[in-house]
Amino acid sequence: MAAPPQADATLTAANNIQPFFVLHKATAASVPSSRARRRIDASLPSSPNPKSAKRPHDVDAQDEEGPELYEHLRLEAFHRTWSKIQSTIDEVLRGINLKLFDQVLQWAQESFSAVRAVAKPCRTEVQQPYPLLTDVICRRIPAAFVLTKNAEFVDDVTTFRDLAEHLQCNGCHLTKLSATELSVKHGVGGCFRSLLRQLVSDVPDVADVSALASWYCEAENYDQPIIVIIDGLEQCSGDVLGELVMMLSEWVIKVPIFFIMGIATTLDAPKKLLSSEALQQLEPCRLTLGSPSDRRNALVEAILVKPCAGFCISHEVAMFLRNYFFRHDGTTTSFISALKLACSKHFSMEPLSFLCMGVLEEDWEEFWRNKLEALPQVIRKYAFGLPSCTRSNSSNFGNDVVTGLSKLLKLQNDWSSVLLCLYEAGRHDKVQLLDIFCEAVNPDLQTQNTSNVDLFVSKMNSENLSGMESGSGKVFMTQVMNAVR
Image 1 (cartoon, helix red, strand yellow):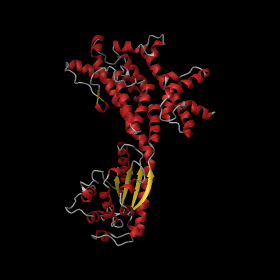
Image 2: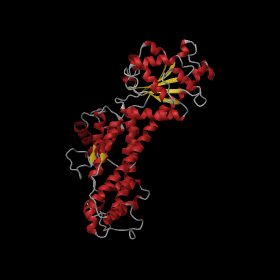
Image 3: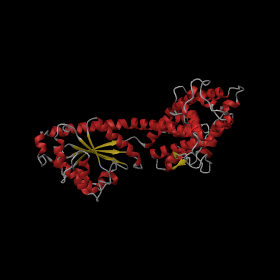
Image 4: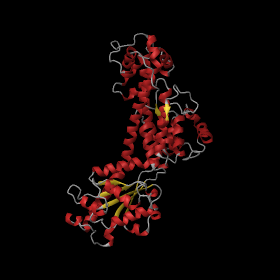
C-alpha cells in the first residue's frame, strides 16, 4: 500500500523527489572498481539457481552497500512501474477517443464525397490561379466542432494529437494551427504561410492559395481532403480566423480543405467568436468527446481497481487523488499528476517497494524469492514485521513473504471483480467508480457483521462524506446495495 502523501514526511534522501515528480539520486562517490563490480552484479536479476548465484564477499560488505544499492533498485522500480501505468493510461484514453476518431473520419469522407459531387475539376483546372465559379452554397467549408468539455486545454493536447495521427493513417492530409498562429500579431498571411509550410516543402515568397492548389494537383496529393485542426478555438483571434475562412471558401471545390475545431466550453462558442459572414461559409457538424468523469472512471478501473503494475493505494491516497481531481476543475491531467506524485512518494519512502517490479516479471515468484534472499540484515529485520511473517511459525522467511504476496494478488483480483459488480449495479444512479473505491479501501468502514450496518451508515453520513461533490450525504456502497435489493 502506498502511504498518503504528507508534507512533513521525512524522505530517505533530500533529493528523492524533484519538480515534475521525477525521482533523483545524487551522484555517488567514486568507489574501487572491485566494489563497483559487486554492486552491478547485485543489481542484476538473481541467478535461477540461488546456490550457484554470485553473492557478496561477506555480510558486512553487503550491509555497507545496501542503502545505496536498494535506493537504486527502488528508483528502477519506480521508472518501470510508472512506465507501465503510463502506457495503460495512454491505451485507455486512446480506446475512449477511438469512437470519436471514427466519427470524425466518417464525417471527413462524407464531406469529401459531397464536395466532389458538386464538381470534380481536372488537374489542369485546379492549377489555374483563380477559384471556380460555383453557387454560394457550394462554397461552404465543412467544419467539425468537437466539444471536449475540458476546463483546461492541457487535457486536449493528447486527444487532438492522436486524432491527427488517426486521420493521417487513413489518407487525409493534416495541418494544425495553434491559437498563437491565429493571432492578430501574425495575421491571416502568417497563419496561411504556417499552414502551407506543413504541406509544401518549398514555400514561395508570395504564399497564396494558388500555391496550395499547385501542390494539391500533384498525383500523390490529389483525391484526398486537407484537414486543418484548430485545437483551441476560444483562444484564437476571431478576425484572423474569419479572414482565413472567407479566403479558403472560394477554393473549396478546387482544394477540398476542411476544419476541425476543438471547443472547451459550449457549442455556441463559434457564434461568439466569428462574424456572421464567416459563419455562413461553414457547414457545421457537432461532435462530443467523452466527459471527464467517463475518462476518470475508465482510468480508475484500469489503474486502481485492477492494478496494471501491482501498485495499490490506501484510502488516504485515494481521497488525495479524488480531492486533487475536483480542486483542479476535474481535469484528467491533474488526476494523473496526483497519481504520479503518490507513486513517487511510495517508492522513495518504502524500503521494500522495489519488490513491486516482480509483478512485471514473467516468473514473479522466482524474482521475489531471489531478491528476498539477498536482503541485507537491516531491511530483512524490517520485512519481519510484514503480516505474512508475523503470522507464520516457519523459519523460511523468503517463502513466507512470497506466499503472502501471491495470496495478496489473488485477493486483489477477487476484490476487483466484486467492486466492478457494485459499480455496474450503481451506474444507473450515476454513482462514480472513484467514490465506491474510496469507500471500499477505507479501513474504518469495514464491518464484521450485518448488525453494524446502521452504525456504519450513521458514521459515514455524519463524518466521512460531508462536503463530497457527488452524492453528498449518501453512502455510495449502501446506495448501490439498496438499488440491487
